[in-house]
Length: 469
Image (cartoon, rainbow, N blue to C red):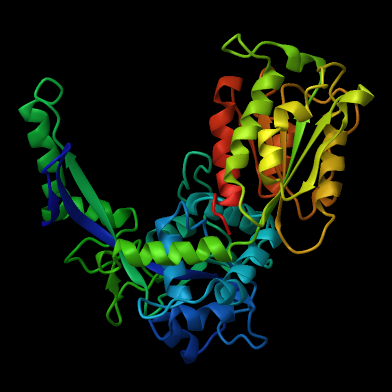
C-alpha cells in the first residue's frame, strides 16, 4: 500500500494510492482505419501532438481516423482535460504561445464542440452528450474524445455517467470508443484519503474501519477485483475484463514509459492552464431578462423583487468578463416598454457593470411572458457580429410562455447555446425548453432567486473563464 502523504495540520490522516488510469484518446470504431500502422499508433506509438491533427481534422490526410474532430472537457474543471492540454501545448521545456495554442488546438476543439452541441463542462457532461449522439445516429460523424481509460471502458459498457446520465445499453458497435495511448500521456492515480476528526465525531472503531477499507482495496484480491470491475488498474494486477479489447482498451498496457501525475508539478499545470485561458475564444453573452408582471413578486428574502435580484446578480456576474468578451442585456414582456435592448452587445466596460441598475431603472415589470419569441430574437441577435466567439443566450424567467407560439426549432438556435434559469413558478423538469437547451449544448437550471447569484456566477465563469485576456 503506497502512502502519498500523512496528516500534519488539518483533518487528513493519510492518502493512499489505490489504482490508476491512463489518459487516452477515444476514437469511435467507425472512424478507426484497419492495419498494423493503426495498431502501432494505439500502442503509445505517437504523441498527443501527433495524434491530434489526425483525429481533429487539422490535417487534410488523416491516417488513423476519419478526422471528425476531437472534444475535450473544460480544463478549468477537469483534471484529465487539463493534463491533455498540457501535453497538446508542449512540455516543461517549452509551451506553445496562446496564439499557437489557439491555431493548433483550441479552434479545432471549439469547432467539434459547437458542431455536436457539446456542453462546456466536465468529463461526464461531455461523455453524456457523446452517448446521446451515438444512440441517436449510430455510425454518424461523432468526434474522438479526450478521457481516461476508465471513463472509456464505462462508456462502452453503457454504465452511468453521473447522476444526470443513467445507465443505457452499450453504444452501437460503430460508436464504441477505441483507446489510443499517446506516448506522452500522464497516468492519473486514484487515491483514498483517510480523515481524522475529533473523538466526539469519529470513534476509534470508525477510524480503524476506514484504514481497514483502504488496506482491503490495495492488499486483498477481492478489493483489487472491485477496482478492476469499475475500469481502474490496481497496482500489481494485470488488467483483464472489463479493461480489455471488448471494451475498447488494450489490457497489456503499458507499452512504454508513462508519466505519473505527480511528475507534473502544480506549477507546470498552472502554466498550461494560463496559456489555455489566453487561447480560449471570447464569449458573446446576451442576457434576456423576464420583465413580466410576475417578476414584481418578492424574492425569498422579502426585501427585493425577483426582478431586482436578477438585475443585481447579472451586475455581479459581469465581474467575470474578460478583455475580449462581449455582453448584452435585453428585457422581454408583452408590454412594449418592457421589451427592449438595455445594453447593446459589445465589450461592457466598467461603466456598464457599475451602471446596470440605473440602466433598468425605468423598467416596471408588467404584462405577460412572450418567452419563445424572446429566445428567437436573442438567438438572431447573437448570430450577428464578426469573429467566431462562443455565443450564449442566458434567459432568466419565472414563468412559462404565454404567447401560444411553439418553442423555437433547433434550426432557429443554430450556433447559439441556450441557458435557461428558471426561478419562482418556472420549472425546467419535463419542459420543452429543458430539452431544447440541452440540445444546443446549454442547460436549464431550476433555481431560487436567493441562489440566483451563485448560479449566474458559475455560468458566467464557465462562459468567460474569468480571465483578463
